[in-house]
Length: 122
Ligand SMILES: [Mg+2]
Image (cartoon, rainbow, N blue to C red; front, top):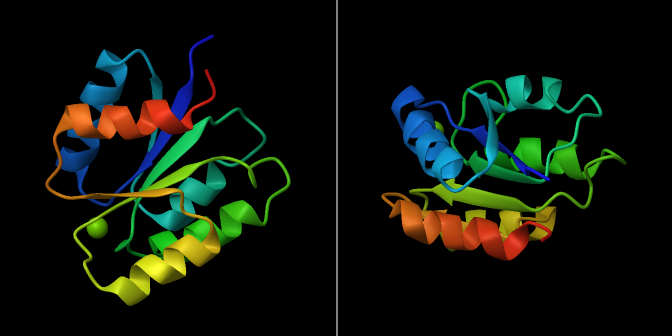
């Protein structure tokens, strides 16, 4: 069964890079430009993994992560935070909120696909 990955980033070009890499890896891709838009996609549909930027308009990645973990349908959905953020405090916040991995931008698509494959159910 095809797995679905939700990509949350305010950069259209970065979402395109991610979507191309993920579709190339055999995943279906959903996209959102900020945390609030991503939250609207959590309507009960199957989402196998989320890749989210930290710095986002309207609702940042950490707030989105907390909201996702508060939803019964999605509390076990693995989340990879994608960020240029190097401050340890933000990582600790993300980890406390349930982030499973961090991938720093700029990233190699292969590196990201490795992280996705490790976290998505087989
Ligand atoms: Mg951003």
